[in-house]
Image (cartoon, rainbow, N blue to C red; front, side, top):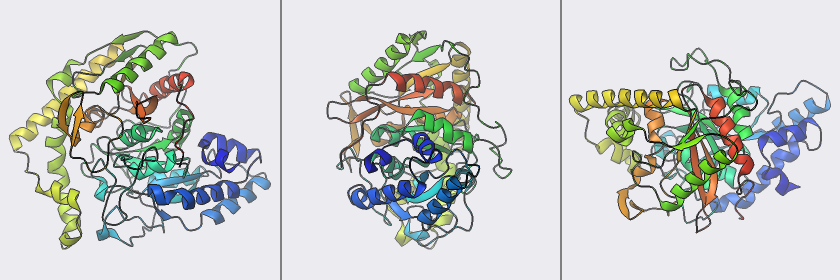
Length: 468
């Protein structure tokens, strides 16, 4: 029963709790036991939330008293340690913030609690959330549950590892260029980066560059992403970017029997892609075609003209560095290598900055033109499956590139603000998960979650989990 609990999805757990087949106390205790048994190998958890069992007992009493229950009533969740949690350590992966206890929950955490969720723990991340490996001076390095010699990604790598390892059924991560979708692909779970501004970033640090940061759910099933996103979406009156897009309706625009117009691509425009990854994208395209949806291989000329990763780098460095300088002033001896590297990067010239702004506008226009004719774009998430710890370069389809190229297919959505779902659809020769990314037009989360659910329904890898 314990194994069933820790590898159930949140929607299933909520139903079991609501029908009294399992108690919130049993669910929370099962996850705490799993953390004690497995996390020493994975190092995904940085802080256990005091009061989780007490909250579970209150949730159980509410069930027994036939009180009105929220959609996540009694279900534990975890949160990346850059997201504020009232009274619970939020240390941002840095000794500079060691011992920091926020007075208030981030908007996203407060909404999870309002839906009945129980905060279980905080999860590991890179220093200041700024790298594609979850490692820092304060809490060390997280490992991939499928192979502990490999990374679970970054910057939401602790969150992805926790869910994959059965330490948590779902959680919250943040995404600047890759950070919920990449880790999800590396560990075989699912994640949603919503349309920019759809979920408030209130109570999350760093905010710079604000135009690229997102918060989104990470989980074990597509229905969980839809369930959690419905709790998270909508303005809070505090985040000026989160001023559009009302509550999420999972059925919006999804008429029974509606055929989705699907384009798929593995390049050009993303950098090199491993042949196994490319084959997985093609297999997902074939699966949607097999379900009766018109599918076509496509190209997006804007991605070929302006390499989104270069555009992102020219824009975000100038906006990020002042925030880093302020946070580290007087604490330079407690900086880890990524903050030092980021602060050492040369400033972008004003001419290059303006050119990058114009390139970002061309990328938005290019996607807008694409979505006149298609509902979904199917792409890789990453160019390779999860890589070994500590490497500096990647060899992808015979080409050597630096590690930032991991972001080649994900960062266009941060530059443009488009929504994207990451989900597993394949397995490498080495037994590692391979993910695909489903991209929709702005505010079209319902469409891509619907397409992802179709893929999930025919997937041969659904329900697989690592043995630890």
